[in-house]
Image 1 (cartoon, helix red, strand yellow):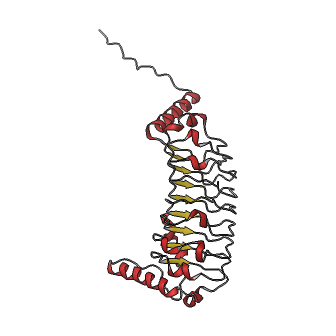
Image 2 (image 1 turned 90 degrees about the horizontal axis):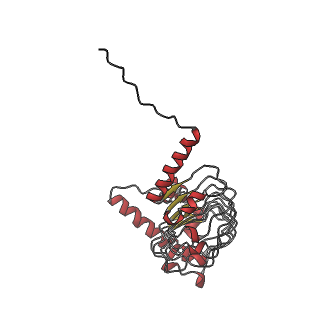
Length: 284
């Protein structure tokens, strides 16, 4: 007797549409399971309806490098903690109700077309990255939890004092490449209470000087970069308050040497270059 040859089970080949539908279903399942949605560079003009339906699950959303013109209201994303909208060059405004994102801690809107920020910002915000926009004004409400603020490459003419009201958690402020002609003095801002501020970047502005309080009072401020202002950075040595700033900087460098680390830029011929060191901004 001859054995019959076994026949291979037949499989139905999926159509391209079915493949795409399966992929989308797996994607939506991942959004729901992890709370993380990545939509980078998909040429989106609005968020997918499927994502909006799952909005209550989303904690992290990266919709950078798309063509979004707006963003949904906080009613749809109540758990959102991290939002990245950088590179949406059609995004000219943020929701006026942005402050109602009461769990949002990280907001990245770099390289959009914003000319202002909403007056009320998320109350728990810790990191705000809004460089390379056209921002002319900043919110009037304070952000006590804010640690890192990058408003470089905008059109600011005034220091964002209302956002930084002591006591607060601010550590790093980058206001380089703006149009600042003065910094707060006297009763405008109590620098002594900015006890966590360690880095202040003011390059490429219109500052004729640095006030004494900026140099002398912030107890943790060890890095100031103020290149390309009307004064020469070497003149900072003569500014009132410089000795106090220099003492803090030297103490930091001595500590780094004791620990076997690098001091980075050293005050001298290259003073003022500290803020331009790309390594400094990696903390963003």
